[in-house]
Image 1 (cartoon, rainbow, N blue to C red):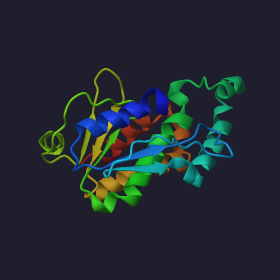
Image 2 (spheres, rainbow, N blue to C red):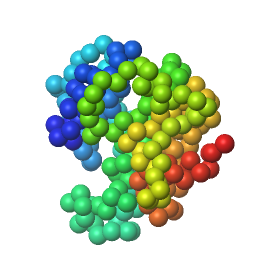
Image 3 (tube, helix red, strand yellow):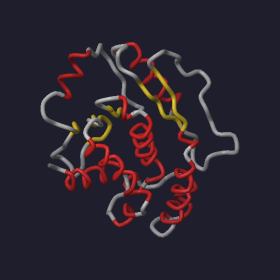
Amino acid sequence: GYHKYGKKFISSWAANWPKSVDLIVYHHSEYPTPVKPWVPTDMLKQKNIKYGNLDEIPELKVFKDGTVNLLKTRIPEEAIKQGTIPWQLDALKFTNKVFALAAANATVGDNYEWIIWLDADTITNKKVSEADIDSWVSGEADLVHLGRKSTYYSETSFVAYKVSNPRVRVFLSNNLDMFLSGEFQFYGEWHDGFIFERLLNIHKW
């Protein structure tokens, strides 16, 4: 996905977002992770852009190995080998986001008021100012998301988390726990948007 859209995500972000905002890009190999994990060598270098490698999180591979065994009870093994898993059950793909958010929460959450998640296929087409960002996260909200009435879960390609609020950090921890504990398998769908919506209903205050 890096050459297909991720590289453009980074360059368009760097060209349009204010220098006062930091970007952390999390990358990973295709599952199963090869002996020599894939790391892009032409990533944009800029003071306010940092990179994190999800292949360095041993729990993620353990989780994916376990998820493959779970998937075998739901869909043909051939579909798993060919990567044609129904997206509603593709925890192998969507938990990369969950682990990346947990890593950001653990490593930089103490230093920031807000963490904003953007999917890697997001393209920034015009200048984003500090005032724009303030308008997105102003008011009394501690979590900003794109709720939808057309379906039963939120669009999670953009979510802003006020990590200066301890309850929001608990939300992020619970999000990871839903997968690590195996609780996700008891839901009808296994992707991050479905689990996010369930947690949102639990945590609303």
